[in-house]
Amino acid sequence: MHQKEQVIAPILQRELGLKLSVPPHFNSDRFGTFTRDIPRPGEQLETARLKAQAILEEREEKIALASEGSFGPHPSLPWLACDRELVLLLDHRHQLELVGQAISTNTNYGQQRVTTLDEAHTFAEKSGFPEHGLVVRPDRDQHDPLWKGITDAEQLQDCVQTLLQQQGNAWLETDMRAMYNPTRMQVIREATQDLVRKIRQTCPHCHWPGFDVVGRNPGLPCAWCGQPTLGILQQIYRCQSCSHEVIEKYPDGRETNDPSQCPYCNP
Ligand SMILES: [Zn+2]
Ligand SMILES: [Zn+2]
Image (cartoon, rainbow, N blue to C red; front, side):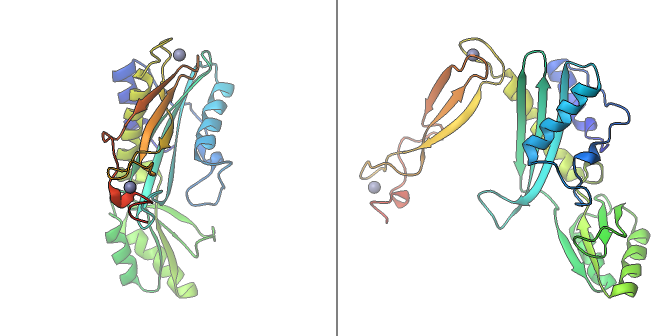
């Protein structure tokens, strides 16, 4: 519904020879909307999986692809907003699930209550309007009226003005649907490239695709005292098919940790 195929399909066609078609009349909004008028049935990965499974059930296809985005504070830099995009491939015949991921702090994700038209214009400018769409509503969790996909300055002014007259303020947010958000489209492209990379990463034992990291263990020794720190010592790759494991030591390219990160040398 949100034209993500524009960035996903060419990559899968070129890199994997997969021909993607968008199922007609498939209402992906029933799996939740960014404007929260329809809640998401589960967390991000689960929702992407539900979408892909629905396609396999409704149509006689063997492979389905679904994508799901999520916006909020960055997992390790909570003062920054970030966009986490997943692109999931489900291969029913081979019981194969592969997930490409991209996390980016390059997002216009934001919301604000405004009490004047000037404030609305400032928010719009900061949000990359009109290339990026906006949403206007009475309040964060009030869905009536709900104007989505605003890309026209006059329409923006009309919606805000209506609410200002009615209640003295208006709630503005960035429209995060892909076709109204070119910045998000770019992150979806990166997640698709990550999916291709994962499909190509095969198990050294049985050649099953998607040989990927399943865990990272801390314990990198301190450069001074040699005691284990929280730095990553090794990461573990595991095959989804034969469970073959490979342990990669020093995945971050260093064999000791800085003493400033050591609980003994720098408590
Ligand atoms: Zn294997
Ligand atoms: Zn130390």
